[in-house]
Length: 392
Image 1: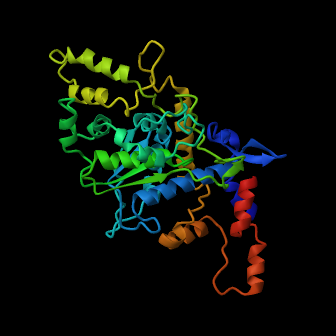
Image 2: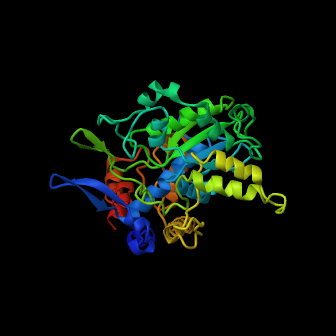
Image 3: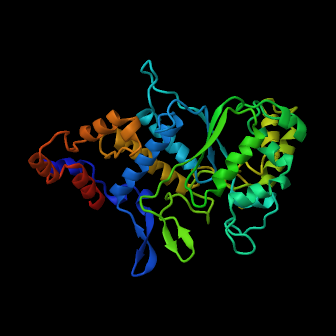
């Protein structure tokens, strides 16, 4: 019976063509190498981190109870798939209101804020990925703040314009900064996919505070929490794992392209001259996207500048199929769910009932030494169960 129950949660790598490629860094023979993670351990990790983020969004996370967020902003490009996971699993993990109804998933949006261009916007020369300054030192959020006086109001207006309902009628910076936005009075959460230096998310939070002074609050959160601690390599600390879709060397795999101000400006100017002949043109939205193109991702484009359909962008389609299968396997009871450790306080009953409903054995309160020893030898005992899945 024990083995049958464990087999219920065991998956073969080929069932998940994209997620099976997940690796982590380990030290082997005194060298740092990438090792592929067991698929069952990996699936547990993705669902667990999704549940944790949903708890933060709905205000039920330990130490943050009662503060559900009204709007979630995902940082392009790599946090975009995170939004897909949150959307898929929301009803599975979101808390309930006092009347028993499920808390409503808040509105969400995407913005492209990366550390490299924003260091440069305040006059700090950095390398391509924005991690190092010209002198080789690590570029930090503190450096950004020390140079914040170099930030132009135009930079903030480009962010603010994206949240002016209906789009902008003028590109005058003063007018944009004085226009009401959909974020006024709201609790806003910015989500990045993973923390390496923390600069990107800290910079994004600071920019939003300046661009939207009438927000109720702004906070940041990370989706990915590596299963192992960081590795020290010389003077640098290296994160052990990243989401499988995180690949700064390519634009594909996340359903969106990079920044392309020329694309948006040319599109706006092209349709501006046609608004009298095409009745359903949303010219104010096009103007907004042209004005905000330094922080608003363009679609994936062919070499000739035409838009690539998602049917053509097969890497994203494969990822989406994996994420949908992940959710389907969870709902059908074929994927073991290890609740986040934060649930042990805020959602203790849910944490325990989730484990028990999946057949895991826990040590009962007040159990004798003999009873404890018997349970600890059982394959369905919590620690034995998890270890078996991780090695299956």
